[in-house]
Image (cartoon, rainbow, N blue to C red; front, side, top):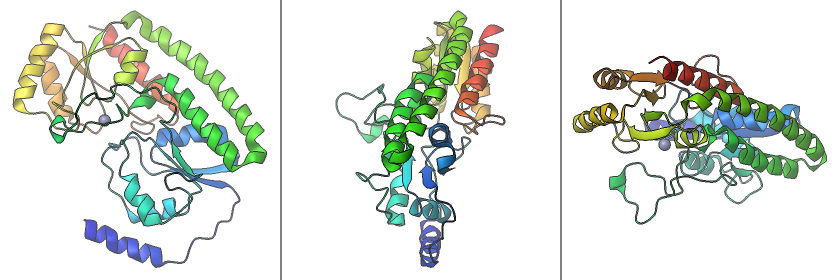
Length: 304
Ligand SMILES: [Zn+2]
């Protein structure tokens, strides 16, 4: 696989550079969520492309030559950071694009201003599974965290295109209004279910759970990134029964059969939510993402 990648990469790099026809700022993001959040500020001044779709596990992305070309041509590269999208580093290296390397003006770490959860204390080692030393990186699943992300993006775009700074600021403010009224609606919908206990497949929902008052009891994965083992499944089923957990939340790319068999044996049910834009049909924006997830979750917490 690596060999094929390297070969294709060399071939791609030998091609003449693409000629840009537009004057727009070229933005590449590692996830579709960052792409949407930069689009709402940059609008027609930028061209945005995301390297992944929401139906892919963002931890494990196979670098492809077509991605190198995108990164090579970028003025700005937005990453989730906190070691979630570590695969981007090989693409940055391969692209030899000095505009977007660490420390340069086009390097944007969207987590910069976010208040992080689950920063490990003490020694971290491989036995702990896919532990992130900077804390849990799934922060965009709290809609309030769109605000620090947007702030970081606004700062960068304004520095890239100073003459459009006022325009970006207005777009930012306008979006904050939309976001705030949407958050109020989501909080209202979730309010009756405050304190509900949930199990999630991967530990990707702690920010979401905290925002909406849900109690995270356990995970289908015994450790982050490690598939469930028979012994863990047995203890999980017991835990779900004892704690009277109503729902098991999972992403579309995990094993539905495993989750459903656990749910059937523990009198709970599985709800498939989207971790990112494009994870399920009809989720095209960051606001869609929460509209869908909140409605779906409310539905399954309601009927018991
Ligand atoms: Zn994770």
